Length: 215
Ligand SMILES: [Zn+2]
Image (cartoon, rainbow, N blue to C red; front, side):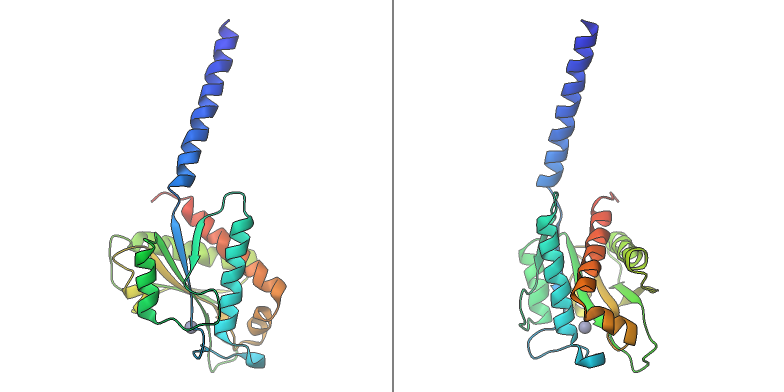
């Protein structure tokens, strides 16, 4: 009899865990991926005339579809799904309207120095109650680029970018400069669909790691 009771309480425990996990997915964080530039604004132009607006759209669309295929998808929205230009103000307005919990702006870097390479992640240079979370997200994304892709880290930096400034009081926000289009190795990397997929998986992993941490 005792054994049966034990089993019953184990089943109850399992049931309880399922309910808790179920609630967790119901209150899942809403993540906005802001796809930089678009339309007449090409952003940076790199080796072989590769354009930043196309690279970041490819990465974002891949993140979006990989997430949909996941067993535990996150609630992800993009600020654009095609080659259109959206103003910086409208990007912030959209994340406010969607009540986003997290804002990630996706960009690629460029430099006159062809040797410049690596990943930079920016957070707002003013503090708010979300600063700690933003720094943690930035760290997770840097770590994903380094561990999964072998990209050099140029560190987490502070900047007064408009999209960060307009998000700082409402949600953790970061801006990712995912490597240099003007660098031979990194520019070539962004030209290959298979590498775009690997990069998208790394970013998604960084977001998962951040979402699974309670701060
Ligand atoms: Zn950019």
